[in-house]
Amino acid sequence: MCFPQIILNAFKQQKQVHLKSSQADLVTETDLRVETILKSAIRDKYPVHRFIGEESVAAGECVELTDSPTWIIDPIDGTANFVHRFPFVAISIAFTVNKQVKAPMEFGIVYSCVEDKLFYAQKGRGAFLNGEPLNASGQEGGITCEPDSDDDDEVRWQGLSGLCCIPDDMLCVCFSVRALGTAAVDMCQVATGGADAYYHIGMHCWDIAASSIIVQEAGGVVMDTDGSPFDMMSRRVIAASSTAVANRISQVIQAFPCRRDDEDQCRCICGGKGVNSV
Ligand SMILES: O=P(O)(O)O[C@H]1[C@H](O)[C@@H](O)[C@H](O)[C@@H](O)[C@@H]1O
Ligand SMILES: [Mg+2]
Ligand SMILES: [Mg+2]
Image 1 (cartoon, rainbow, N blue to C red):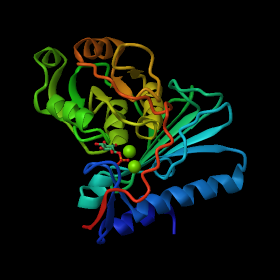
Image 2: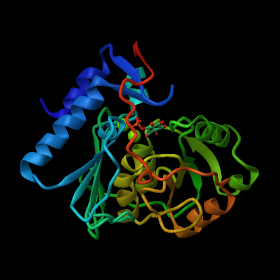
Image 3: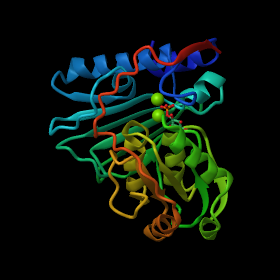
Image 4: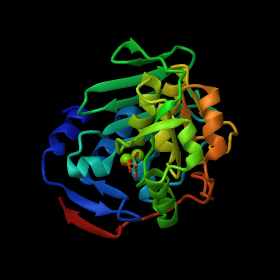
């Protein structure tokens, strides 16, 4: 059975849910299974390639980007959606070489499983959704962002308060806010022109690497929330329909400290914090 079908079949069924670092940080047997299948299929073809996979990192592997070709994998982006059968769950895969942390990396793929939407982009070759070219809107107005992310309560609270209480300054670039529960698909909305911007502090490289390439290849812009160039390890991202929109958002974002993904990140959370059936 192919791995999107594994996700779709499990989507409807009861799941054993393990908590990782917090109530908002979940993993199921399907996340682990999909990551294992993906890695072994890639390894069969490319034995020397390296991986940064969300669930392998959660099990203790280091986030270490070297010059070697590296696959950055989120086997299910939107695990909380998956657990609650909210129909936005995606597989996110990015590929980079030579320690390239800035978009565009080599290529990125985001497959939104329930919607059957395949977003992909390759450096210098444009971005596509199910074969049709993607174009960012170039406008300002609709923003996507995620309030519930991160293993850190402080960061999660900052995200929640940011969504529930959009700062006045932000209202000049935003008339509506949407949160699909998967950062990868949120960002891809910017590539489609359906949303004009996305921003977040606290996501991980596996959440944002693939869609950062897709946004950029669709003519959009990705940058750090402080206005500096995008760095997938920084855990801070603005994706926007134009440089002007990205700059305006970076000027009003309340920055707060967030540890980089590649800093001291051999963090085994084996055993987790609990298990539930949903
Ligand atoms: O589902 P995962 O891969 O853990 O990623 C999600 C993150 O953990 C959530 O908290 C966010 O709200 C989602 O948008 C992420 O993409
Ligand atoms: Mg994710
Ligand atoms: Mg995930």
